[in-house]
Image (tube, rainbow, N blue to C red; front, side):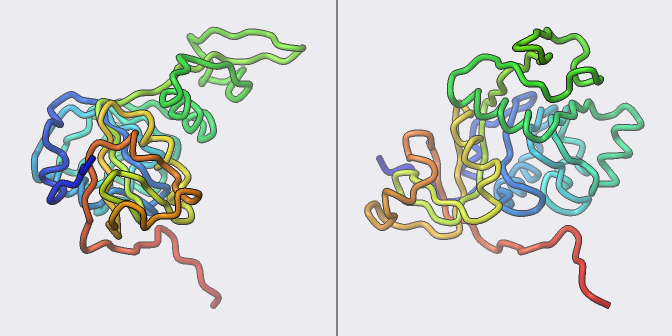
Length: 230
């Protein structure tokens, strides 16, 4: 039952070129910083990355974009990364932009074993091109396929050695559903505790979904856009 690995470098063992990864977080909140740094160091290439956003130029997935490790991004919001924009416009990077709620549901469906679902979001736009559409009760819907990954990499506030995870605040937006949708799930945690410490009623992701867990270090609490009164 003990799923603890020593560090990020050990946790990402088995991630190879051309694999599909899910990377948790919302903006710069709850991103698996240690694993991203380890992936940059490992130099794996041709990755398809599923993430709500692409980080910023010098942080998060932005570091992997700088080192040309990402072949395709499946994302919702990418407006904070100039290098992402440059690679997209130059044709270096393949991008699938997905409405945020649809992205969340596609990931959740992947973890729940649901192959596809219909949603009204995107009907009549470029989002619906090439997809099946159907009328339900007088409203048109678009068929969207579930998303899966070879590895799901998440960051939790607390976790135990069995892999049970507890997230904090905005980090719950994408991390929990991604943890359920990967063939192998890696969790880096700010605080690693023994089994029984976490209140079972508060656990957001049961350990059955997690294969590897480790205590991360040196986390940065960055803010994408700081707005203050003059």
